[in-house]
Length: 161
Image 1 (cartoon, one colour):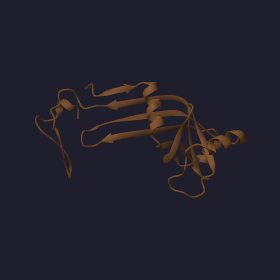
Image 2 (cartoon, rainbow, N blue to C red; image 1 turned 180 degrees about the vertical axis):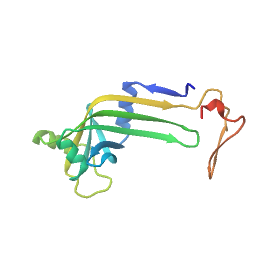
Image 3 (spheres, one colour; image 1 turned 120 degrees about the vertical axis):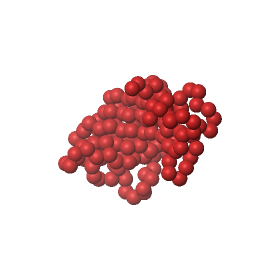
Image 4 (cartoon, rainbow, N blue to C red; image 1 turned 90 degrees about the vertical axis):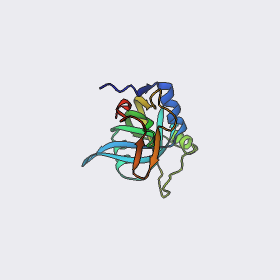
């Protein structure tokens, strides 16, 4: 069954969402397989920069490992939202001039602590999708409950659920 609620977000829209947000998830492989780790970040030109302590992310950056990055927002009440996925590879920023520049970016670790390593995700591919409320849904169609959502009206089959 085709889902006409999902639409692509173009490159400019993806870039705007990446610039407006500052929390995402980076996915890399470690010795045990894929792992997804939260990071706060800034969009810097066409790259994504975040700070890290020694560990999985820095290890991946030292090996210029392939990585994915994702940001999203959802509204569980209306089952709408968007996501942006970035694919590329990680690299630690080590050039003194570049380090001085990125240290001036508005990038402070959420968790605090010693996060003095700067990592850049060099972007190879960006894609995004948005899921909107279908046309013609009457006001009040969704009603929040303690157990999730209750759809008013028909059986919600027209929502593609």
